Image (cartoon, rainbow, N blue to C red; front, side):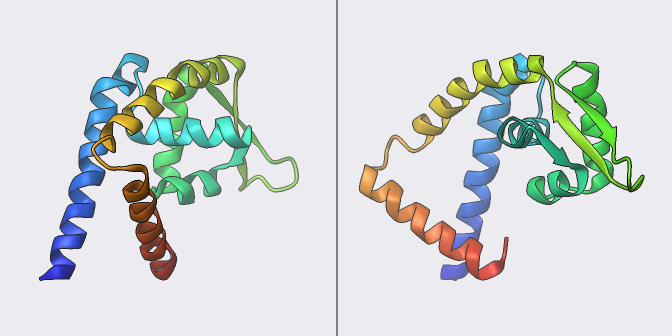
Length: 140
């Protein structure tokens, strides 16, 4: 029963976090959780291969392709094929995408702070250590 409680609570907090951020922050930018995740990876990495974006977001390459089309239509990124291997596609953040993330991210981070504000700094650190242990042991 303890395992069920832990996993259920992890699931509930993940869903709650996602819903809160989509509703309170991302909707103002016309972004879903997954499109934000991809744009964040591009913001950090500048240019990322679609396979790596899919792995990072935990979605299929087809999903990355669909989301990238939407982000392209908003002029937040663009795709470019590899000249040596046509099976490989890279996605690059645009200047507009970079400005969007620079505006959006502080608001997103404030939402993260609010979510864990009932925990002390030490409790936040303990939760982080334990979650990283689960992630590492399960190769997530």
